[in-house]
Length: 522
Length: 83
Image (cartoon, rainbow over all chains, first blue to last red):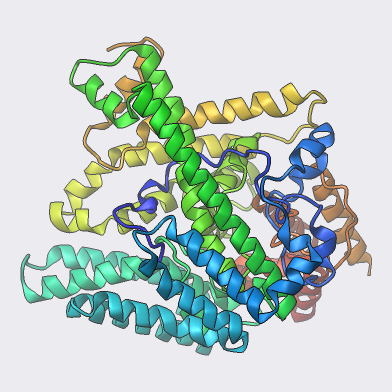
């Protein structure tokens, strides 16, 4: 089930930084605008039903407010009659049917929509069993998906059991060394396991078992990390909720959507009205994802079909072969790629979060108006929210809270590099563990030279962005919004030159390509 | 309640700097709701370290601990009582 995508791994582009184009009419009042606040806050005071890091952004929009308040998709959750209807049996059926029909757009056939719809129907009609259903369903899906591969199934079940066991240990012995820094120990152990797997003779039984474990652990790595980090939150100690966050039914990549159980506890619908509201928001988000997907198809047909502008990897390949495309085409494909990642990430994130909302959790969007960002750090936050949160939770804060406390700027820079460089690199290396298995550790590491450069480039940009003092915003829209947003877009366009999951060319070729954009050839 | 007023003033300043002039109640969610960003959480952490001597490396850190003025105040009280 998971993300329900075939043949495309959105995580492979985690490093890519772009975001959704905000077209006025995006159903965003639920998160960004204050319009929905009155409706939502009066019943849902203690949960972040409106929340997003962007909530404050709209407030200062001034003359843009009326434009920003226009919606292509109406704010259904603010209509009392719609909310009431969604709480009735026919309303629930209508919501589920609409969601299934919408999901069909992204799936090969209608049959593929049934498993998730069935689970959502159970939750909708029996919300008191939500946690139990969501805890069991991922296991059932896992068994159904992998029963023909006993090794994979066994390894996956063993890893889930390990995650639960470690969670229990942390709760049982919070003062132990492991209990105090469980994520550090867990990630270190995983690294040691990879090294061990590299050391055993290839094609032996032990080799087979170890790499199966590495694969299963890599898949569940960050889910278990969130469970372990849950020790600090209150009220924790709910095993069913922890279990349902291990590759939840609504889908995820290797990055947990939306974070872990602690977050789910805060955003869970507590009564029928809240469930109706969040499900309406889920349906709206799915509708928005479909509109974006249609737009993306039109975009591709026009730019890459009709105008025949190459994709960035094609342009890079031609440059490497000594037959570069015209300079304006290089620029065009770089700029287009920036917006295309916008579409891709918005669509896949919206699909997952819409299903999560249908399950009764009012999760924040993964991608939210990144093109309105005026700083690099803000863009990073808006582009892939849950990946950024992962880096912040497991790398930034641990580094920030422990090191260089007396040197404020160094402290910030160190923590930013810990997250954006080290954490980002670690995430991708462990995610792509088959490369280590197939090529060997050293060759795999060297094949990541472009990734390391990308991450260093990104970390440096974020560092500068965060260390710059906030200044009062200039009055003019051009200077306050447009110019900074253009600068942010330019940075990420250039950064994307180094976004190469294929690892086909050495770093130098990417640098040459970047230089050629500025008419520098060497 | 001196400490709480100080916390309120600090959070109010953070919100104002990010363009948020909405009313602020002590129980309002700050981070989970999105009114403040991760970088603001860092500011709060530094504020608590400097003003109240809280060492998150020792006590563990979760954003929930600093998600509202009430939560922050409760944290300062817990830490000061344990000292």
